[in-house]
Image (tube, rainbow, N blue to C red; front, side, top):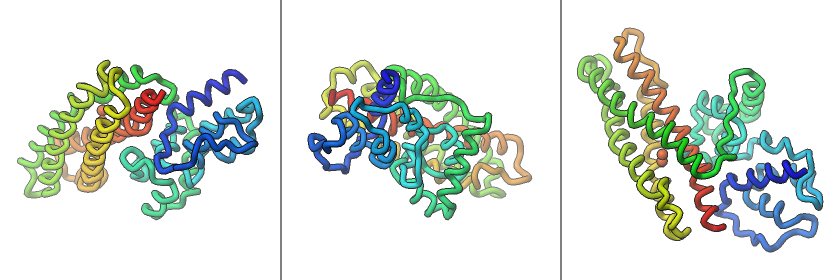
Length: 294
Ligand SMILES: [Fe+2]
Ligand SMILES: [Fe+2]
């Protein structure tokens, strides 16, 4: 029972705040304790039915061990991606933006993509049962660990790869742009991405990712995070353009080796950045803000 309680407390630490919910947390229904009511307010759709079904006076029953993989079509993309690494693979396959537009529901994303939401859930389950999924639970990490992972895994990768990608695609556009005019567009977008994103990494590491963040109040930190979030929105728009202009990273049949390797690196940069932004928007930033609220 103790470990389940600790597990759910850790779950609470990563569930994004429901900013639009104006319900008073002090108005706890008679049938529930304050802790579980708080969970419901934060992610009502995600775990409501399980909590309501299984709640008892001693907080959480053993049945709640299944909460981590609970998902339904009205869950948000970010909450599903957080609960299942397999979902990330499936979202990437169907081009669902789970990082900058992670607050849209699976139902809405499926409607836009004209695919069946129940088929997507089935595919996630099937992928979970395959051998390809790995165990990756960033919501259990503390903030210093998350920051260290993001900087060493994602920021280092971008600082190394973005200049290479920029040079490589520019070379392709210069040599083959007349035959493949989309490479001019790709070169322009990558230049924009390179300039904006590298400055964004420096900005993150200067304050929000530094020990200096400890001395900031919630009121000081919140606008900084809002600013980083709006920069993520711009990055997200560029990533989608890169995917579309490159025909989902598919080089033409007659493309040269540089053209092909550029598209491979482009795919890696886009997928890595989506996951990077997702970790910041859906795990790290809400955690940093909650820490300020105590
Ligand atoms: Fe970052
Ligand atoms: Fe960022």
